[in-house]
Length: 291
Image 1 (cartoon, helix red, strand yellow):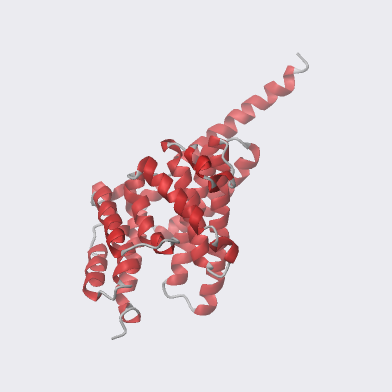
Image 2: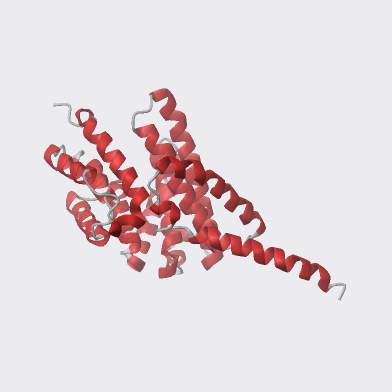
């Protein structure tokens, strides 16, 4: 009985922590934050939620869902509320430290993703570099896989002078290929949208035809509920090809989208942020097409 007392004391606490972690982890794609129509409200609320999850993770060292939620949350926060403001009109003096901060947040997200993959499948970061390690991952691991390689790639893009990270591009490519193999429809085409911007960095490169194929599939899977593929393709492909008419058409389509329509409510916040970027790019298209 004396030996059992500490276990009985810890069990309710562990149960409560686990239930709290489960609740926080469940608010992911399509959750309350994703449906919100006030980006600034979400910006101010998310840091508390993320730090709460980090505190819980110290107590729950085997909670996979918590690692996924932190990988996703830090990635989304870094992109939406640190990187995007730095890219959309910030002065150079403000933009540079913001991008460095975004890079640190992306790496934190990547590390949580790697922790989650290790807990879920026993696969370490080094094992992921070999085909045998990637083959251990299954369809249910695609969310963790995506929220690991997406911030990894974003961290590289935020500072391409970090040669140690640039050397990880082939690994990210392999992780993307495995995710596409397992569930190419994940999150309404998120993998295909990612490939539009990432594939040119592959060692073997890509072609405009392949980027267009990824774009078409991303739109098909989005089912008219997400506008981010329009903005992504305009920036990554139309601008690079100096196709001004296509660039304007895609961004105007995104800018005119009704973000409050019922079918797209679960993506409202992402659509609002994509629409904000589209309107900014249209207002500054002379920076892309100087002639």
